[in-house]
Length: 397
Image (cartoon, rainbow, N blue to C red; front, side, top):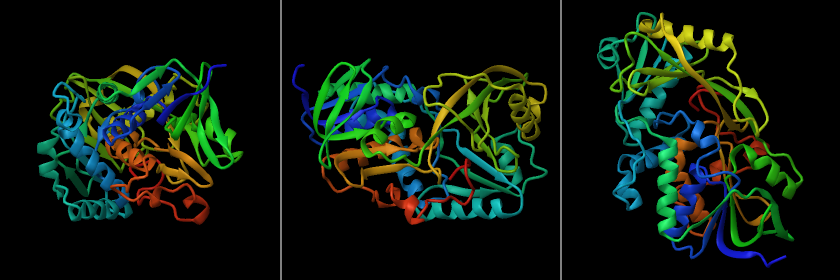
């Protein structure tokens, strides 16, 4: 067998987090960066993302990561140093609505937190909400939060733009190779082996999303606080379209806490914001049950009466890598030098990917991180220091 290929930084996973990490590592001075993925760039869970961009979180640490990331998305070409880079950005705003009670208090508190961090996030009234979203039914709502500089982007375009920028800096992509496991010497990770080759690395970044368990548990012998969940998404089409200028909508009053946005130029992308169904990390696509279509569709129609007669244009499923508090684990794994991990994004990965990629690259290179990683440490679950959001599991954290 040939000797292991040597690199400064080895990134496992060519999703949007992995590609962002690789580009940031090369930009920060890593001389040889290698990315491994069993498929291609953004051919896993990144491609399944709904692509929503917002800074509205009840967890302050997430607000900061989202704020930094949204700044990058808003000037993506300049951020990557590539005027042709396109992330498919649309910024029609983010409208979160609720009725009276605990969730309204949480919405108002989150808006105040955003404003304290320099974000244009305000409470508006029902009339203003209908001006922004004429299709909205408001009679049973009491609070309307609006973040005007939010919206959505294209995860595939984003990941491939990061990959192209990384390649321009010399990053090597080894696609079609399956990671078989990590290699270690004592308590130090020294690289990884695949079904085709071995790699020796100064530091290894594991950004394998729902597949993190299989690789990391081989190393540690301990189960991770991580499960794969299936989430169903559908696109609805009605005679009165959901236009591109209409904001992303989050309805905290609906039983499923649905979110919705424009899809294409007239369809409505809608999905439940609750916990999903546990499933295998290797599940590609699953049927969306008719009762789920009926439930989520009826909730969308209640809030947007124009969709009471909507037809189902398409349905699909995606996977979340979920932790107990619905927030990611980022940074070193205790007891293992030479290893940086990123898992458990719980549906937040795409919107946080520019900032997270920078932090992982900084941690990998031994540099001070722009944002403290301590709140995202893996030991927080055993310590009882959860990053618990005010909205509950499966909502907006």
